[in-house]
Length: 378
Image (cartoon, rainbow, N blue to C red; front, top):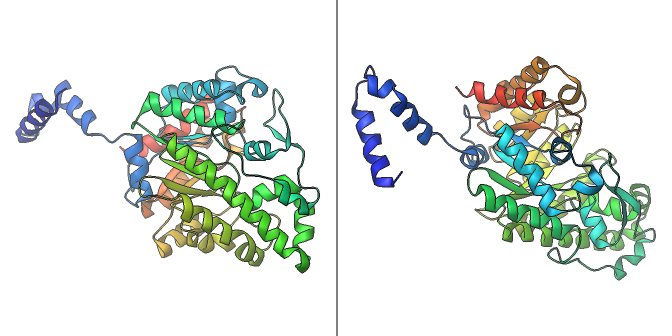
């Protein structure tokens, strides 16, 4: 419909009395549908603290999407066209607001030189590392995301998604692991953390973390060039280190990454699993537009910190360990509603799985999650 005609129709319908048959008719419904916000707009509202009713839904679903269209992971996670086909099919069938594109958490490690094992039923993981000796960091170079597998295929996926859906939804081109988590992947967590305990190795540790920051920065900016509206990294958090060590060693490099990639039209997300109550303030201090959290961090703690800080939004926090893959539709609906009830008054909630949606999640449960958000908005 031409804009001038749409505006004239809007003016006429607004002037009619509420009891008018025309206002209650299909024309009135059409007008209201045209005024409804789309997924991109809903997501941006949440990122700016304005989504108290119309709650956007994100699906962290690269495994679920591949299985949904009948792909095994060995095939479906290596080709940009197949990654995009899976994401687009789920988007068309489920109608969520935020698409999160990735092929797992080993993409950058593979691009740098680690040997990665792909299998039909498990996500890719590191099989052989490149930093068994941390001093070998001098031999590594930052991969070109546009030319290096699998980053190049993930970027191809982003470009296809952007071309197909345009501004109808928020497109997140994930930038894989954050600096500390990527360092774990390259060196092995035990090896890296053992060396971190040795003050003599601190200059080498700093060099590795800066290298990892530069790698993820290059990838994130390539996602921006591909047309994504935002990006994300997965932090290591306090699962293996103390809050004090997080503040000293992980947070500074997350801040560097966010400062380097964040733009007014390109949002930076920070994902950390499990209960991160003790570092929520620090995570927000990173400058991230949004924290991706799971229900390991209690809802009430998240709400309290959001109300105090009034900066970052939160993406999550529906349980992916039990409720989504194994719960009933009612359990999924109720769990989603509970997250919405507690956190949405902040205006800063994007509801969805708190981490990667398991491949075996029943589609009916995904529909239940989305219905919980949509019906809350009515």
